[in-house]
Image 1 (cartoon, each protein chain N blue to C red):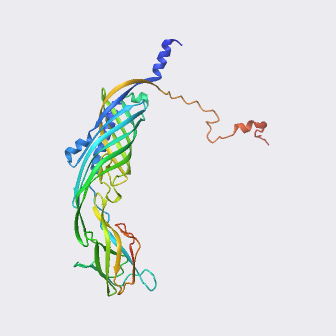
Image 2 (cartoon, helix red, strand yellow; image 1 turned 30 degrees about the vertical axis):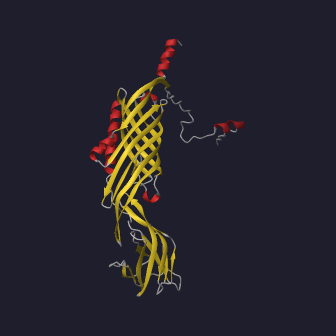
Image 3 (tube, each protein chain N blue to C red; image 1 turned 180 degrees about the horizontal axis):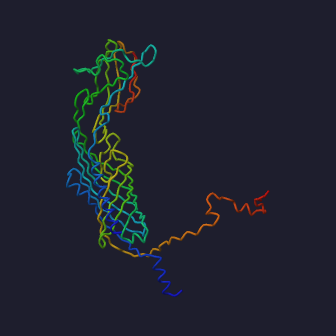
Length: 249
Length: 154
């Protein structure tokens, strides 16, 4: 094989993937804030490719939440930090460093203050008015984040991800758990879900060549294996020459 | 791949809109009041037996919680969260007794939709003994969860 042939084979069997650092922001939070001034969520993130499949993820954000209804008012504001890994499910020859469809797993920690300026409770004895003073707390959670992103322009990526969060600790005693807190969202239950839209600026820092796994063609089946239901043990047939004898009358 | 990525991004946007729509406030379907749950037992047999007639009202209240009610089992007795004690007049089968409760109250978040209620921690329960023989506290914590708190023997 000549050197040129070797080079051609090498090109056919591998692909160059640019590893990137991505700095992004979540855009749906500020958009929602324009329609609902009671919820402001901002989030930024930084991810670094380790190889064509894996990347490390860091995120941070701020949340300011207000809620009121006929019998109470509630305020919560705080910051959160997330860290974890992203795993790309696409094959390298499909992703080419431009597309990502995969899943991230993160640990999140949130520092927040919550306050109930007023609440009202009615029963047989009448109406009771009260409030709960501002309290600072720390909550934490695990997040699974499947999603998709694509490089629309050179070094500019857009994408979305679903966030499925499992609460580890809500930060406040059981009877007055937070209704909402930064990073986790609705805190009433032990799981929460959300969806985020991200735009990212990418900085390529390294190129790697990744071999492409060629799918081997399946070997044709043996004649005996092609017969459905034929499960004759050929090994036992060969032992001692005890083959079945066909007797004719 | 470019058209595929646009399709997936549009699918994500649709998902976000659906998710936002699903976040509209819901209604409250949970119990919002906590009650002392009191079961009645016949002192002579020790067996569960609802009074033939039960009247219950709080001292200082114009309205009765139960008024000549038949077959009440258990009785649900509301406490006053604004004070640390409250007194009820209880009439079982036409005979009056007074029951007084001492307790502490603390706020409890039911849910985002329902808001807050008060839970109580029972300290003591006293009664006169015209028809009531004994009151036993089985569970000191009074919640919205229908836990049995008192056994009233009469």
